[in-house]
Amino acid sequence: MLTSENYDVVVIGSGPGGYIAAIRCAKLGKSVAIIERDRLGGVCLNMGCIPSKSLIRQASLFLTRAALESLGVSVDSSRFDYARVFAASRRAADTLSRGVAYLMKKNGIAVISGVGALGSDRIVVVDGSREIHAANIIIATGSRPRELPGFTFDEARVLSSEGALMLEKLPKKIIILGGGAIGAEMSFIMNAFGVEVYLVEMMRRILPQEDAEVSETVLRSFIKRGIAVYPSTRAVALQKDTDGVSIILENAENGQTSLGADCVLVSVGRSPNTENIGLDRVGIVPEKGFIPVGDYGETSCSGVYAIGDVVATPLLAHVASKEGEIAAGHIAGSPGAVRRIDTLEVPSAVYCEPEVASFGLTREQAEARGIACKTSTFPFRASGKAIAAGETEGFVKLVHDPAGTALLGAHIVGAHATEIIHELLLAKTQKLPLSAIAEMIHAHPTMGEGVMEAARMGMGEEIQI
Image 1: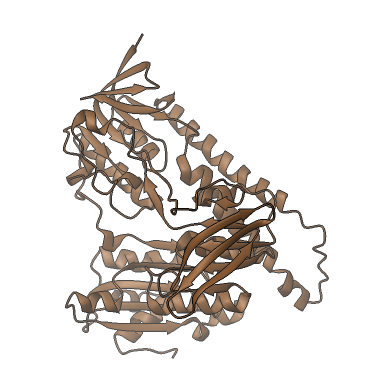
Image 2 (image 1 turned 180 degrees about the vertical axis):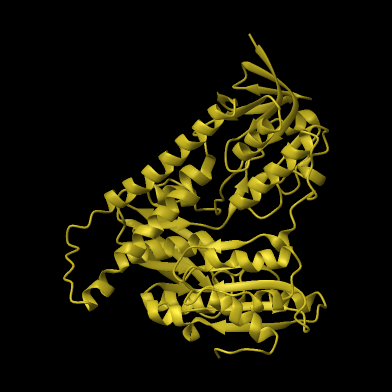
């Protein structure tokens, strides 16, 4: 027997898109319910962004042993226990999940545990037995790690990114398939803690979505750290046994080779969770698994919105959050100026060492679009702060029009790149010329001075190089 409830807005999924949308709707005066099948916060808080950054931080601390020893400090790492590293990552995730629960209560949002699916127009059914009526519905069901054919996840020998984050004991040797952001971050973590890492990337270079010089810088750093990198290489077969896995790799130049390890991590992207959520009942037809949307994230079914990883925009937590805000504003009748995400103004962040951050166009992309451009690059080896801190790896690269009046993109590789990218993004979104960055006083010494110096170079007024 169905029980029935009524709300102004029902949100399916409580990840960084769903819970932000719910809070925004509530603050705009709407009655809101949010449906979550697992833990509040979704993949990002529980099995992705947050625990992985905890592991990265602890990996960085572990690597400081060499610096301490150079000062005459004796470091005994024989009692190192990775289980404690894992426990710290879970505490971080648990803290933030409880924080989301607090925010739901604070904003008067009803939290419904279960699996939600569209029943019909303006109805969501939870676990087949609870009927929720809503004037508006926001689909925020997120995504899951994508499997490769023949590499089915068992989370023992064949790991997803989520399975890798839940390891309480490290393998001695691991093969990582996919050199994108997740693959690069997990390579750094594993290598830092002494795991023998083999990173396999099908494209010509790791971090293939980033600027080519940025990718090359990370590659050199990885090789120096002892990570074996296999570019332009495909994994074509897997064999599991009691001792581990054996992978057949294929490269156009070298043919097929076999590589063995304790386990393999498959990090080749994510798949949207759009199956079995009742899209067919309201006439929504996915395109390549993603839900088509118009302005404000509204689907072809009026009053039904889709945000985050189920939409064909960058699969990033901050994109989901912004899309949630946009949809909420439209539902509440107070839409902002932004109708949809401008993907050229979305920052990308990779938290390995060296860090990578970027937005907008690379020079190659600009030229392919017929846009006249120049690049201005300031290396951190010329930065006072970088030299003092021993963090000279990397650079700031700006892509701009020849006159320096418009910033087309920015690409940073090096220490704190993910923090200092935002000054440049603000300049891009506010259509500021390079002179606005170059003439602004920057504290000395800081890594952020590299941004100022790159802007000066774009104006032909460089000082520090």
